[in-house]
Image (cartoon, rainbow, N blue to C red; front, side, top):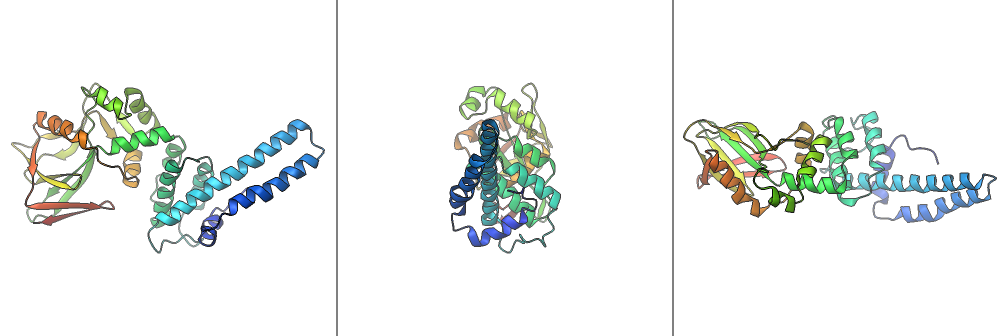
Length: 299
C-alpha cells in the first residue's frame, strides 16, 4: 500500500462514505489478502511478522486519520470548503494528518477534528506549534487542561457609550492554599507542571500572575452566563492566581468547551475579594459570549 500524500482526497471522499462502514471491509478483505500474500512469500518468519504488524499499524493509522477528518466535516461551519481549492497549506495538512494517524482516543480525536475544521474555515490561522503540542497531548492531560479552562472568567470594559472597549477571558487558578481541592479535580502539582512542559500554561506556585486588565469603573465580569459589575475604589491590577495560558493554551482554549465548575466559584470570589476586587450582580447589562463572539446587551 502506498503512503497517502494528499489527505484532501480522503477528506472530500468522506461526504459519500461517512454513513458507511468501509474500514471493517478494508481490514477484513484488503488486509487479510495482504497478510495471506505475506504468508505465501519466501520471507523469513521474522520478516513476515514485521510485515504483518506494519500493515496492521498502517490500517489503524489510516482509520484514525479518517475518523478525525470525519469529525472535522461534522464540526465545520456550513459551506466550509474542503476541496483542493481551499487555501489550506498542503505541507501543514500533511504534517497534521500524519500526526493525527497516531491518535485513537475519541475525546482527543474530537480536539484534533475541531482544530482541523477551524483551519479549513480560516486557513493559516492555526499556529504551527499546535501540531507538536497536540501530538504530546494524552487523554489524561487533555482532560486536565479542559478542567483548568473551566476556571475561565470573562472581563469586558465599556467605553462612555456602553460599547465594548476591550474583552478578555482569564483563567483564575488559585492553586496555593487549595492544593487538596485541585488534586481532587485532577490538577495536582505534577499535572500542572506537565501542562507547563507541554507548553499550554505557565505555572508558578510561589508567585501570582497579574492580568493586563485594569479594575476600572466600567469593568464587567461574566461567569457561567451571569453578568456582574466590578466595584472599584482605585485602578488595581487584577491578580489571576498561579497559572496563565500560553499562546498555545489560549488557542486550544478557544477550541474546546469546558463546563463551569460550580464549587469553584466561592473560591475565586474569596480570592478576588482578598485582592481588592469586589463585584455584584448586574441588572443593567447582560453579556452573551457565543462562539467566542462577545455581546453586551443593555437591560
